[in-house]
Image (cartoon, rainbow, N blue to C red; front, side, top):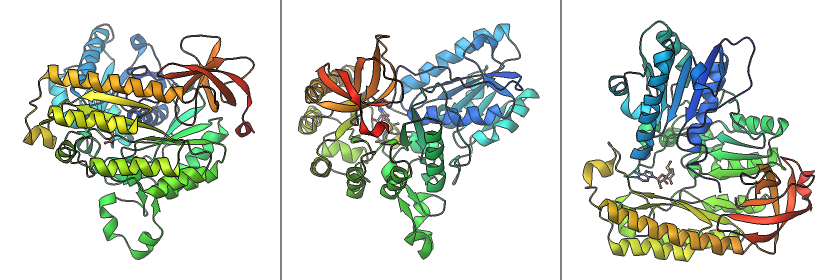
Length: 482
Ligand code: SAM
């Protein structure tokens, strides 16, 4: 299951190949969404040119960076605990410097330096190119902060180094920031206004990944459907663009087409789609190219019109259901997953039942479900009381998770008896004798290794399943294997 918050990689130290000329050691760990993991690859790329090799041993680090998430309170608590751990290491390694990157850095700014004495450097998500200067500052004994949000930074010109990579699947960032202003969400405050990356640099990165042996890319953005390239600049300024810029603008469907055609055997995924911005030309483009995977992550957050309005999600339950119907009509064999929030302010039992009935309607393949966590500075925190008791939030969340598990099993069972194309990503976590890969629908498949290799496309006959995994046996290479 492709997770937005992948618990198995949270806090993993990221490693890249070493350059013998580099003399200092960088320990970098990342929390939160795929975007943060992708950003850490940009940071490591910038610092590789500044004399740093990565290490996964905290005890030998000269510089420790933690790329942080603010989406829920728990994410920030985890980072504060890690800072305590870094503090204990610093006692025996006084020259070691500690930097906080990402959303928590942006949200708290220099307040972090006051609250967490161990922190030397605070860097927001748009300021990573300034890292060489900031590191010089801390080397000279001063604290350093850069949390300036940018109108045009997309890091399109930084070739990310792939950290902890399986060599087969990679993330390619296509937009930064978010303009949606969902009332629960801290992202617009921590990642700034939305801007899109030059399509040529996206295609160039995908081409390079193919040359390096990668066989699947996931195009990343907070709201990929909102992608719009008209020569650079903020999405909100598109109205001021010239006629020629408007006429030659590239939308998300256009970008998908460019990527799919540039590498016809590269699998293409994308995340995250937003129901209010998703247009049907994206779905028809998916149907047109066999290398674009049949999978859409389409967060809805709630099934109640009243709650959707309070969340400033700019669509209704009925519009969302119509979009699902249209997707199933154009692309009948499409995996669909959700994000859901339980216990948003004012949510009644009736609203909660609306969420369950929407889930029953869609029967999602899988989902990522959360109890509402109030985030300082958001509209919900400023204007609405976080009034649903924790016990009620937890109970509603459990009911949502239970229903999702039933639907996941319903969906995986549909695959039993079929033969699916699988891209092999690596060994199964549970058995050295088995490979793990995914179908086009993003469903995990486990099967005996035989003589197949990582990075190959194979056809797997599905014999059995759990709610999260398909179990099968390979019956040969797929035509995509080349
Ligand atoms: N941009 C995407 C969207 O809005 O659909 C996803 C953004 S966020 C990184 C991933 C998920 O975290 C959201 O879809 C939402 O379900 C959850 N989330 C965001 N803010 C939250 C909050 N304050 N409390 C609980 N969950 C939250």
